[in-house]
Length: 168
Image 1: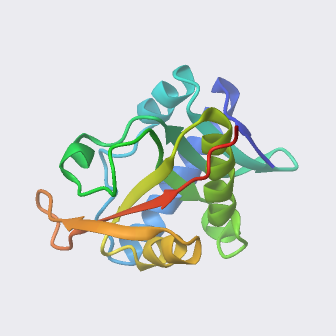
Image 2 (image 1 turned 90 degrees about the vertical axis):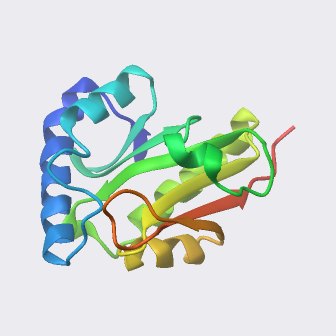
Image 3 (image 1 turned 45 degrees about the vertical axis):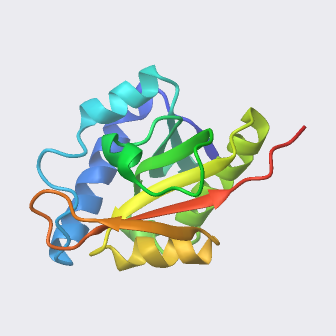
């Protein structure tokens, strides 16, 4: 079940993200490191009512921020159109809960949230090293709109979007 996160979830979220970062590092991915994402990022998401968790039997198995603000470079991206959007950020799934459809469930949840709130798009991104995320986006019928290099990363970031039919 996906629900809004609370302050009481933060210890489980922090541990989940540490585990996810460890697995990413072991796979050679450098997108997340020692300085991002951290507990304070998720605390700020909770304060803005933008953080959601996937929970089963009291255990938090995944977390994601669903916000109406993109990352700072989103203004430079060649999106299909300038339109209201929700952005999924900092999605992490507990390593032992992967390959169960939880990440895709977050995207479907965000799509419903967007439709109900009058947002036209879901937008998201990942580093090119993260083949699992790229495959997830294609599986969810998201369209690749741009690739850009940032900072010290050797792979470009991939930017995806999906048009959402708005409910009247």
